[in-house]
Length: 68
Image 1 (cartoon, helix red, strand yellow):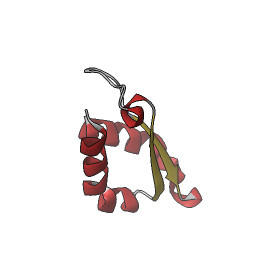
Image 2 (cartoon, helix red, strand yellow):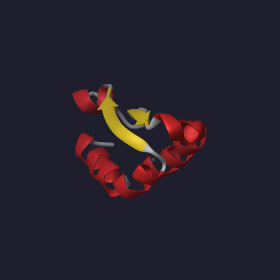
Image 3 (tube, one colour):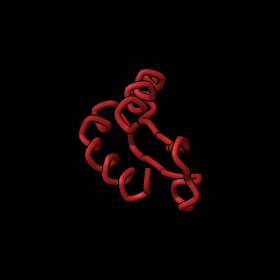
Image 4 (cartoon, helix red, strand yellow):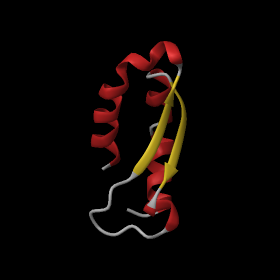
C-alpha cells in the first residue's frame, strides 16, 4: 500500500481514534521510505491518553482490520 493511501486512511479514521483516546499516530518503516512491497506490513505508532490506555490491544486489532 502506498504512503499516500495509508495517510488518507489514517485521516478517515481520525474521529473514531480520538474516541479511543489516541493522541498521536506515527507512520514509519518501509511504507514511509517507499520501499514496501505487496504483503509488507504497515508500521504505525499509536500514542494514547494515559487514562484511556487500557484498551490498547482492542484498538490495535480493530485498527489492523480497517487499515488493511
